[in-house]
Every structure is written in structure tokens, then in C-alpha cells.
Image 1 (cartoon, rainbow over the protein chains, first blue to last red):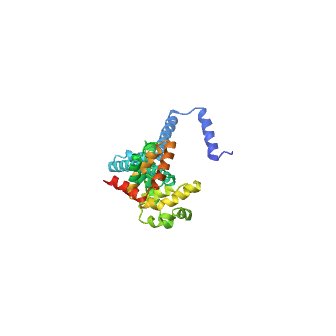
Image 2 (cartoon, rainbow over the protein chains, first blue to last red):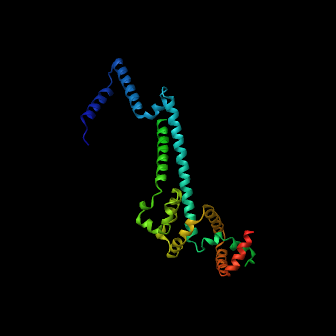
Image 3 (cartoon, rainbow over the protein chains, first blue to last red):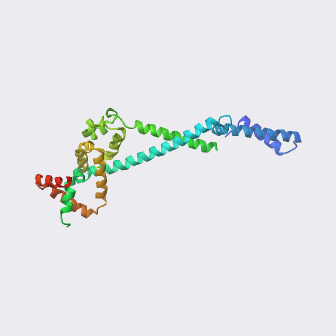
Length: 120
Length: 136
């Protein structure tokens, strides 16, 4: 893999820095530039975090929090309802394909007649 | 913090999306696949007045139809109309009693199937008399 011009320059600079010989002022400016770069990288990575931290947007914080809670609640409710529907669908399918007809479960006469019969 | 918030937000968004999909996932008859229309054919006339949940329930009921034995397919097709026309309360009652039925040992279930046959062979007036007795 070939190195880009920027990489080669970076390596040359790193070798030079490893040899030392920086003045205190150069070291201080380098440390300051590093801090600036790190702060910039952190800002770029956390837009949503910034939204929460922004003290001038308390209403946004509340609104986003409520939306999150509502979303999670609705999602949980929907998921449970879907699972219940699947379970109920499976039960009804089993009932409809069983040997006994639907009426066997609903005919009160059959139940009464069964109870009046001696147990075998 | 930002990562947690982003994860929560994506959960929330996916929840709202799934809710929207669930609502949309109750198709009109013409939106069903030809195969699904074929299987649900016995209740085509009832489809229009069914609420979205009932439609999705029916789609769950006929899922796996192709994997059923011919006897199971025949049972399902012949009972769909009757099931669709029952009141929600009767369907609930039948589901409850079917759950009871499933809890009975297999050999006793077999005996009960024979009892059902015997009950069906009673003269109609005898069955009517028994039913009238339960209504009192």
C-alpha cells in the first residue's frame, strides 16, 4: 500500500519531533493545537448530546425526552400486541383444524349431556 | 450520553415506524397476494367489514396453510365462514374451551370425540330438549 503525500509528511514530522529539540514555546503551541483538535472532534461526534446540553433550549430537551419516552412506550405496546395477536392466531388455527367442530365447544347441550353421562 | 440518546431515539423511531407498519399491514382484499386470496376465499365477503386487527388475525391463522395435511386444510376451509360469523364473545368462549380441551390427556380427548359423535347421533328433538334444559 503506498503512502499518501500527507502520510509521508506526517511521518517526517513525527521523526523530527521524536528527536526532541523543541523550544518551550513550540511545545506549548503544539499542546494547545492538539487540545483544539480534540475539542473539535468531540463536538463533531455529539450533535444530539449538544442538543441536550444546550441550556438555551430547555423546551427542546423536554420535547425530545417526551418523544423518546412516547416512542419507546408505543413500540413496547405495539410489540406486545403483535405477539398477542400471533399467539391468538396460532390458537385459532389449531382450533379450526382440530378434529372437533367449532360447535362442540359452544354447544351448551353437549356439555350438559356430558355431565349427565356416567364417566367411562 | 450522545450515544445513549441516539440509541433511545432510534428505538423510539423504530417503534413509531413499526406502529405505522402494523397499521398499514391490514391490507384490503385487492392488496392480498393471489395465493392469500385463494386460501382466504371463504371469507372474502366478510373481509370488507373486518377491522384491521381481525384481518391480521386471519392472516396469522392461515399462515402455514401449505404445510397442513389435506384433512387439516379441509377442516380449516370448511370452518372459516362459521368462525368469521361468530360474535367476538362466542369466539372468546370457544378459545377458552379449546384451551381447556388442550389440557385434557390425549386418551380422554379421544373418548370425548366419541361422545361428541354419540351426542350428534341423538334424535334432534332429544338434543333440543337437553339444550332447552341448559337455558333454564
